[in-house]
Image (cartoon, one colour):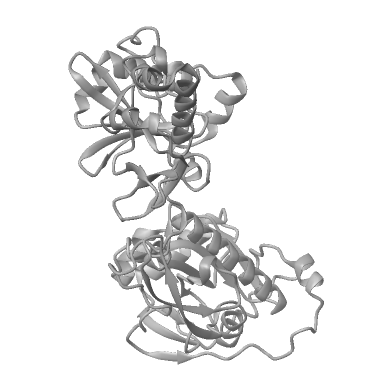
Length: 458
């Protein structure tokens, strides 16, 4: 079904998206969408014969009535042009589609993909037909929002009872929101392996699956101060760290790449040392410089944003990641829980050896199927707002990408220094919050990396 076919669906109305208003450009040559923030988006040449239909579009009407309004003024050719123009607005995410019955508006379909057009199943599905397991129902402002990464639209409604209305159930069935949606064998097999949260995250972090603002939008300029580029120092004992040896180039880079691997068995006669740890953190994570930049957003607001330069790449130079060494055995450093200060190249001691420290090390060992006896666990935490202050829709995915970049840098630096690195896939964020006292939505772990001294001779 195409957008044009909506002329045969009187129960589906067409309406300009909430918050927008169609007006004319300053020179009168174009139609524009006037936003609440004062901006104006050109949407096509001005046509006087569209004005009456546009007045109805603001409140919503069946597509056939909008078409007929233009036809009465300018004939069938211009009426067809108007329908195609509305189709283009829908593809741009500027149109919403109320579902109507005798009781009035039941819900509103919000297209999220260029190819999506709402339709109604011939009849309401059976009562036992339920929402698909990937469907997500949540609050958005004062309304309910139903969405699924498998459907190219969202459904907005005020009352949960709307889900029982026949016109809404017919729309849900036609769109693919229900567990009765037809799927081929290959698709069924693939979806059986996807978990709900993984598919939601994947779809929302890529362009093409939704019309939400995405990318470096700087939405909080003028409302929330940006977090500083460097974390406030932890109180307590400070332990200076040695710098890495100034002998870069002693081994070809390609050789380091070839030797890089996850090492889980160590030469126990030569545990990692404080000097080794300092050299690794110097190579991989030390702040090289600070810089203040001016940033701006789509509303024309500007403000300062402090950035840093460090050895590993990071999306937008946010550098939200913090490294917390949890030490079991390290020559020259007591067992305990530490924070790495990348500006001063120092460790701050948070706690000594506690049951929680022992538990972190034990869980890291478990994550390697019991093969490794980690000498140090690097808990990698994120100050989430460093990224979320800048980006929309992709913040958490960006943090995970940055974590992967730090992993690889730690791997290569550890390999070059003759140490034993191993990234691990699990870690206890609740335990980290308990030990540090940090609110896990403000700063929490997103990765863990274990270290040992030189690899065990083969």
